Length: 167
Image (cartoon, rainbow, N blue to C red):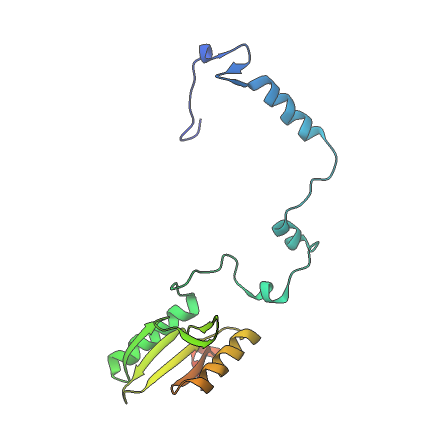
């Protein structure tokens, strides 16, 4: 018996009944379902894995179980470590993950991955991307046109070197 299993005395299961549930009927129904040879419909996730469902290109690039706001992915976490190293050397005075939200238009906002104050006192916004979607590209370019800050696109290059380009 496994951990958390319940043991009931034989007197508790009398005449095929356990409390109000008819055990025998449940067993017969389960056996009938197992004997049925009709195909069982696949749910969306299994269908996608088997190639039977059409998967949107954007969805195929995104991680399963998207992270909520304020939670770093692995690349963002590695870049935060990089910023901490720069902070200990004095090149970065302050930084914060998803610290500010910029309004681009009505009901349209852009939240940069990192707000950074560099040693000169200038505010920069760093966007860490593994893959740039059209929506993200438009938002960062629009924000760069509307706000008087430096916007940088950060990608992890070969050999773990950070490729940082101004937008």
